[in-house]
Amino acid sequence: MSFSKKTIRDIEVKGKTVLLRADFNVPVKDGKITNDYRIKQSLPTVQYLLEHGAKLVVCSHLGRPEGKRDTDASLFPVAKRLDTFLPDTNVSFVNECIGEKAQTAVQKLKPGELLLLENVRFHAEEEKNDPEFAKQLASLADVFVQDGFGVVHRAHASTEGVTKHLPSVSGLLLEKEVDTITKVMEAPERPLMAVVGGAKISDKIEILNRFIDMADFVAVGGAMANTFLAAQGIDVAKSLYEPDDIPLAKSIIEKARAKSKAQPFTFYLPQDGVAAHKIDRTATTRIVDWSAHVISSIEHYPKRAPREAGVVHKDEMILDIGPFSASFIAGGVQLAKTVVWNGTMGVTETEGLRGPVGPFAHGTDIVTQAVLGEFGTKPFTVVGGGDTVGYVENQGLVSAFGHVSTGGGASMELMAGQTLPGVAALEDKSKGS
Ligand code: 3PG
Ligand code: MG
Image 1 (tube, rainbow, N blue to C red):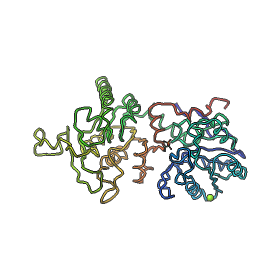
Image 2 (cartoon, rainbow, N blue to C red):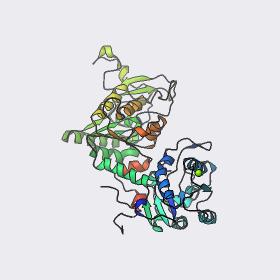
Image 3 (cartoon, rainbow, N blue to C red):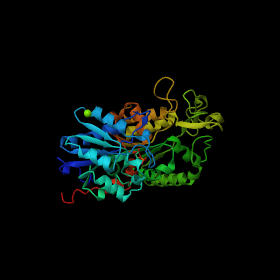
């Protein structure tokens, strides 16, 4: 099924004031944007609207200022970045998003000019989806365009409430995200492999269940795997895991087992891991091999490895998948035509002593190489989830992937088959077109 909502291509914007909701929730450190992927991804829609003669008013949130004005969460740095990206466009900024100040700034706009409004979350009414606030936002424009894919899983005033007052259509990024992700989940080229990582099972329970339903191969890594290991009776010692979710992990394993009995299907949990005492680039690391029995002590292969080779010491943490597990997953990738990847395989934020790949990022690095075709075949890969996208971006690899989503929670909810309120609220294509 292709995207069913009206887009900016279906409407006339010439001379109209267009309110564009973007997701400019980018990381800002000391007033500097440290990653502008989301801003870059908004440009096709921004440029389309400007070229078609719209007076363009853009709104967004940044961070979670919880209804209060907070200079650290100002969108001003984003206005400056937009200005650099749009050298021929008059870009301005107003430090309000509603009321007289905003109105006055909007009235000054000419076709082909862009005005960025200040963070909508400086008003508590935004997240409450307050009808009056939504109405005030809407009063600034003639048309609403939703292009902030990363935020459409929230029913807020600037994503849902506002659509009650204006003709509301989709931007090009939102269309591309929803189209690509939906296609991969509903009609992927098979075999479909899902690689799921990150910290918590509880965050990804829906997505895991859907992957077990849809995919041919599901591999789990990251801290989330620790809960699965614990559910199988492996002592994970100081590793991050969720004791309360052990029953959940057991039920997922059961479900996966049942599927693999009924049809060709693989559910893969790591068989080895990288253990250390601290999360630090100088940490001494050790491979613990709890079930592959291939790495730790080759001279005793296969049966008589010393006990400690298979045991995480009581003061150690598992911080990455081990080389055997990474190779196994990379092997699975060779057989896949489509890969959906959500969540890193270990701690990727720690830099290395010599280069960008830190001591706990080798598992993620091997998976990255595999999906990018370094070992032979290159599947179409969709990457989603904040930590994975951050890793891929920091390695400068975004353009090598089939699709790198700008959404965190939104891409996960979409993959899990949930309705996104910010998309549902837009006009359907059939309606009057
Ligand atoms: C995101 O970064 O996931 C989106 O911008 C949504 O932000 P939120 O999780 O604070 O609603
Ligand atoms: Mg400019």
